[in-house]
Length: 114
Image 1 (tube, one colour):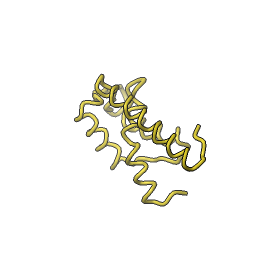
Image 2 (cartoon, rainbow, N blue to C red):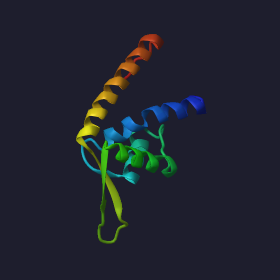
Image 3 (cartoon, helix red, strand yellow):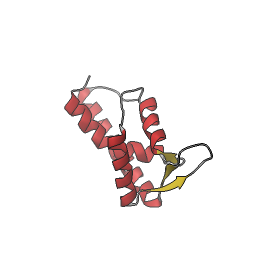
Image 4 (cartoon, one colour):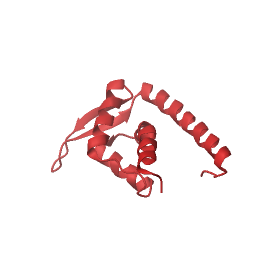
């Protein structure tokens, strides 16, 4: 298990990439994004509301995602986020950078990544 400091820094360093990856294929609301991060990481990564929503707002302010309020009968109003053209470029660059980082770490540690 990673130390709490290392875990926090790794999560902070990958948060934008995780969110951009999850809204790449279709719009998603914040709660769904948080749930998918936890589900797809098999519980290793969790974002609480206090950290997830400010990050979504920051990505929207940068123009990488765009949010839209949606109301459905019998449900709360939710803000769905989708990737913008600028966000697609950033996402591709971040994904390439992450791939290079993982490969470099693997060369040093001998740990193979999936």
